[in-house]
Length: 145
Image (cartoon, rainbow, N blue to C red):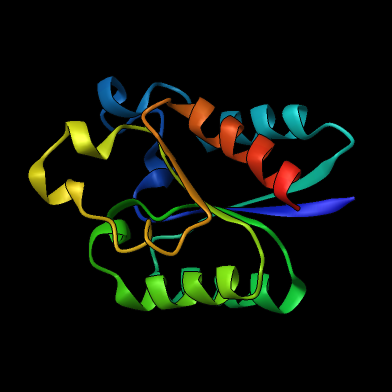
């Protein structure tokens, strides 16, 4: 059974209380439960969250070293972290699926959110469907792997 890394960037530890009108009222534990149920006997979910850019980069290096597919919600790092972009590129250049996800639709929000430095190297991008963005990404990653 394959493991799927579900990596979440800054402020996503505040899901459930941070802007519920944008991000919903469920927290990361609820997301983990949804993904574990969806993965069933097809994959193991390793869900992680950090506010630390360096830690997120190290987790992407870990994905490369272990050939582990990634679902990545880079959060605010989406818009400016070239270090994160370069680490994500290592994943896809190694032939490992990496799907960028967003709970909200960045293109329907403030202009600065319209740019992603990750999208151009990601295997795919899913945004705007709440937790279903992750669920769709999981289906894609399992199918691509």
